[in-house]
Length: 394
Image (cartoon, rainbow, N blue to C red; front, side):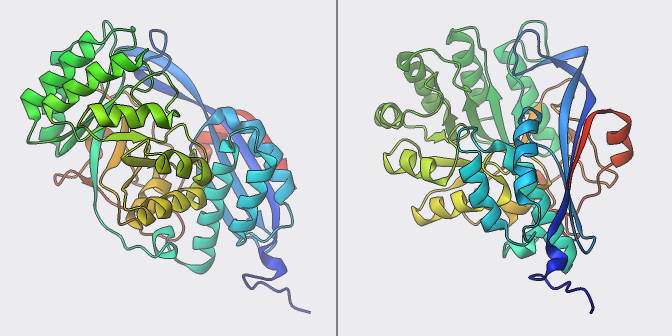
């Protein structure tokens, strides 16, 4: 009897999940001054990354490299539970992830979900964009900087304005700063005002405190500077962790600049709580943090139902495909960048896909990959040469 290889047959059962933990050299980024990283010319570091491959009985394979490597054990735990499940049953696997990783923020499910979307697209010969009901398009991007720090390329308010000018010349029409994390507000306010004076009116401007401001009062001071400079949004203003809906509703009553929360809010239900309590104006979602493409699109639909825009956090092929299928969104985040050209991750692609600062088009946009699945080819030879650990679950 011939093997059933239809989408719902045994041929699509998951028979193997591989996890690849590997290291990659990162140049021109310093993590000793700030764990979030600062632009630091000449510095070399190594970062650990996670790759996932999912295979079915009929030999179909989905792959994804990205997201948080520190969720390696969570991904390993989840992988054993999805063996034998239908690779097309992403909603069922999403529910298992929600249940089994409910105490772990569920981030470890992201790489697996993204790999399953890649597998499905390759199996039926369609891009993830097409499967989501979108169409290939150019994605307007913003340059999202490293944090400020002494001795680096973003060490002063003027350096931020200079770098914004440089990004404008490359084609970017939007720019987001991550400021100082020294507990003060003076430098952040100085950079905000310098950016408004230098490129305001030519670029959409954003400020991301990344929850480093200590008090509500600090958040008000920086928010008023954003008002003066005409900023597009003000993100995760202070050290509540980006979770306190009541406080941000009060902040929204005091300042004019729209608030963006959600990077640290896990899951569509928790995001709904923040939004319905009037805690934010823009909504965040991320295929590397919100149970993959499946979870990201749920958040996007929540935002759309409430008439709000959703802004995707970070960058990568999964992010581009999601954005191409979302109406209510504005910019693609090209993170993290600085004048020294160091980025959080270097290319791991065997194709021409790139998320480097200089890869932006003259129109300030990035293209969406058009091949089947995620439309990218990973450099697995590089991954295997730099392995820390390789686990096969079957």
